[in-house]
Image 1 (tube, rainbow, N blue to C red):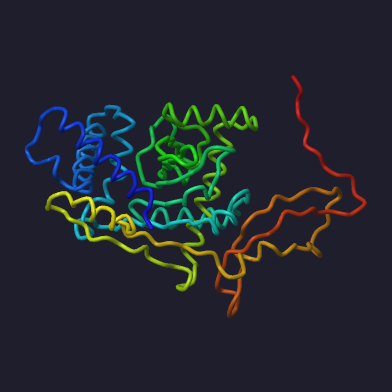
Image 2 (image 1 turned 60 degrees about the horizontal axis):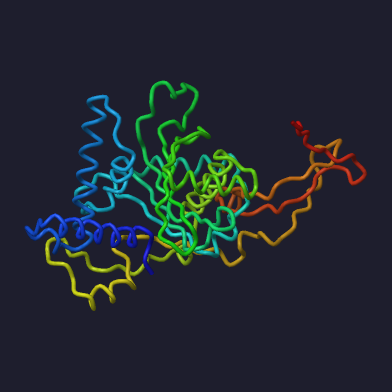
Length: 335
């Protein structure tokens, strides 16, 4: 199984090689494997981003994104903190879709994000849909300096930035958007803007609703990654990386497509599916005067000796309050 990072590496290597051939720049570069070409590209982008930050200049969005990918193309021994990569399959995505995350889950997910230099979440093809025809394929969470004008002294999450990669189902996902955690606004390229336009036509939802959907999935994934049992984890089969040699022949490339170039940990759903199929009966505690609907959400449940351990469970959508109570409706202004 290959991750999105494998696919984009192969695609980008082909684009670079075609450009070199068109310019007549033989010099052996066009014979290098895709991984090595991508490594050179991301290293240059990271250097340019660092220089721009020191000079107070704005860096191009494409260079900024490539700089985020750079740690995944560096030898593990050259990094102080190893990047963390995990894969969300259809089983997990189906359980996480449309569910909220409690404050404890968000906090635990952000804690893990701050422990790592960069986190990559790979989402299986067609697993997490954003509308009828689009899907989320990859998410990167990193530490980065936030513009001073947007920095809040009360915003503890202002150092985390999310890059999301989406695309039409059945095609290579390359549409990108980015935002700081805690800020519902952000930047997107033309492809992502086109997706937003289609999504708005389908359901009337705006950019901030997409941010909420993706962030819920991110924190749920990272919270689960922190507590998942060993039998629910599996490292994707890895291919041997050729750092200096020539580009492999066609047969070798075909064989490698069954493997990943990166160390990605696939997370599998627990046998009980977090208890998502169980309807929760809310009894006891304080009483509501009205009947309200509670959105399905995940939370960290205490268990074990002295209830010191935590596990991720799902609380199904349900109604709370007296059965004969008046339902509480939201009020909308009609233009």
